[in-house]
Amino acid sequence: MAQPTLHDVAARAGVSIKTVSNVLRGVENRVSVRTAARVHQVIEEIGYRPNLSARRLRTGHSQVIALAVPDLGNPYFAEVATAMIGAARKAGYTLLIEETGGEAGAELGAAEHLRDPLIEGVIMSPLALAGEALAQRTRSMPIVLLGEHEPDATFGHVMVDHVAIDNAAASRALTGHLLDQGFRRIAVIGRQDHAPHATATALQRLKGYREALSERGLAFDEALAPAVPGAHYSKEAGARAAARIFTQGERPEALYCFADVLAIGALRAAHDHGLHAPHDFALAGFDGIDEGRFTIPTLTTVRPDYADMARQAVSALVERMTSESPAPPRDLRCGWELIVRESTGAARTSG
Image (cartoon, rainbow, N blue to C red):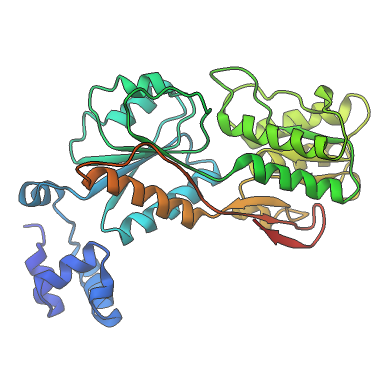
């Protein structure tokens, strides 16, 4: 049986081919809501799938971009992916998603996409890929990186934009909230010290934590900030780190985890040790994943504006793909919100 075509969709929906094309490219503001819904219904009914190779031959562009993330099992990256799919669709692009495992070789492969000529640009959240490797890519593809980078990071002549929240400021605000609650012994889970496992994001969150302590005249205590081995944050890593903290020396008054998955793991360790937040200790995370609304207690956290992040990343990538003289590398900041819940209190403020 022949594959359904664009003409088939248009004929069955009773609209022009141009209208179907507008709907597929996400520019639905050019058609009525009812017409767009009808087109989508027909597409599902007849099983139409765009021929991306034909589109590239016809226009010179495939309208396909990629998102490469370390771990889709981590709810943070799942939230990022969802936001990116929506932003890409609004810009008229199809988004392919690749999981790299945080391995340098896989990340470099995603940055080059030598085996997939349809992909015209990449948005990537790297864990292991250094700037020097990016500068030596054999296929110079437009690329936008998610997350912080060190100020002295070397990217050669690669025109790379970075999109991130101000992690130091957000971390400072979250630590400040804990200090405002009267807590002074605040332990952190998620510290990373040594390359290649020390991500710039972790370093910036530690910086914000230390700055908040310093502003209140409190000294940084190494014992309250044990390093977490490896580059991956996970519930298991959070549970292990919290178990060590609960069993070694004086228990801290609060735990600040550099990712919500670490905090969820810490809740499990607390339960195993007969401890409960916020009665025995305050607990805060970072990333604002949806699970934090359903933990017991609900989790205080910093939530990035995922929609803003996705919009800026896609917009920057499209500009690099379509501009004849793209702008110099840029650090683009997206919004964030401090959400205070049961694990530390019940107020809410944003930044």
